[in-house]
Length: 329
Figure 1 (cartoon, one colour):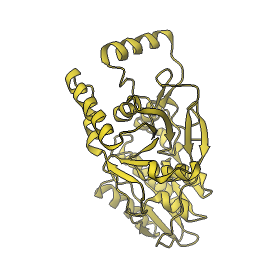
Figure 2 (tube, rainbow, N blue to C red):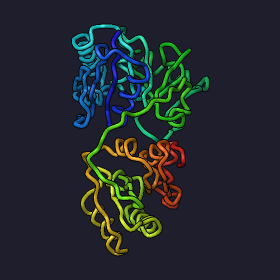
Figure 3 (cartoon, one colour):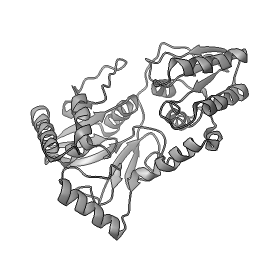
Figure 4 (cartoon, rainbow, N blue to C red):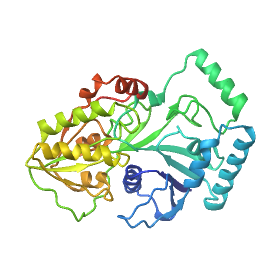
């Protein structure tokens, strides 16, 4: 039986590696499916790897109409036949995506196991109980108006939509991430990597977010909280890790805050996954506002300064937090 892993980020890549080591899987049985144009340059991969990013993007149109959905399902089943052509166990971050659902509902898939893709537990992602009315509406909509191959709402787990609900396995670096999923959680370790970087002792690493880019918070308020965090937390030497979506203007405004406080800093190389730094370097001090990276850093025993509750004064952020259902640090 093949072991098929969906890899959509550095986190799922590292978790997949840890899961493979934990289970002692035969490398000949393993297939990595890269989506969202994921690329890895730090680890040599001895498994079969396939770029499935086009399928991932195609599934954005699953619910356009019946004929489009039928074509996409046929494309994915053909892909499975061409590249897997065997029974398989699927390892995916969740079932809140049409592509993952279609791989799961393919007849060759015999089991799904969850693998960690983030650090923040999201309570609202898991629908562990349904009222009679919810069950009726979801059943009529999905099984009669759509198809049994995909379903809505797009939750990571919806009770009654697993092939076998008796045993669900999950793999993560701690018990916190999947604490709202009714699973047997297995603690795995990310692989160690020797990195060609030096982090000065008694320094602080600042993790910044893409909140304002995604309209989760007002930019002026976010920058004001960044200033407060820098003022209260800065060390003699500081490292800065920007979020990929932060634009040049916001980055420069944050850099100017460090300059105003005469705080020496260095911008970290974004090509090196910070998850690897967390797992490969010890005794770091890391500060920020609730990024998944802070949760990971805490799990790996680093000194974490998280001020996510400062952001609750923002109306946008309160709405975002309520809709997302994520835990405070």
